[in-house]
Length: 199
Image 1: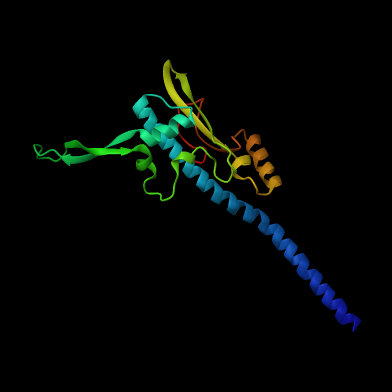
Image 2: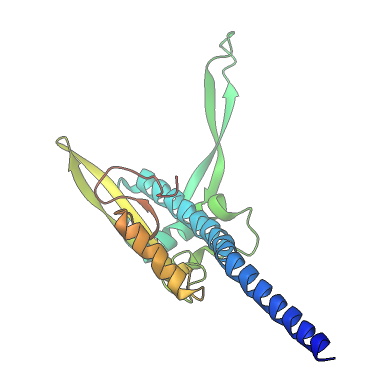
């Protein structure tokens, strides 16, 4: 009888150990899966902000470092909808005529196909409980030429909020060790680049 009780206890202990081992192996897998899902959402926001800044620059000859200005611009500024048709006088069909058929608000052009998307909150980092992206814009000199630049950042501490703190701190430390920004960003205040650090 004692032997059977001992066996049951050993089996229970083995099951607990197996679960603990499985859980310790799966913890980083779950973290990475959740991190990747959150990064995908933040990257989409950064791409949207980059597109809005590009349109702003086309119409104003500079980037803006103000979210208030950018959000107001998206809500009020309009861009032309252009239809390209072949030039009827060209028998080779190489030349085209650009015909403006109307105008569309910048916000509708960028987000019109996304139901329930509120562009007025585009300055808020997803998953951060209300923290805002960092936005800077300015002019740098490259080879004697002034170049407009912008940079938008979202640190890991903001969009990985609520996840395992030690793993987040380890991730930040490893990025800093590699001299890389500990988070996601698009653009640069040092180089004339509009690339994201995930690209």
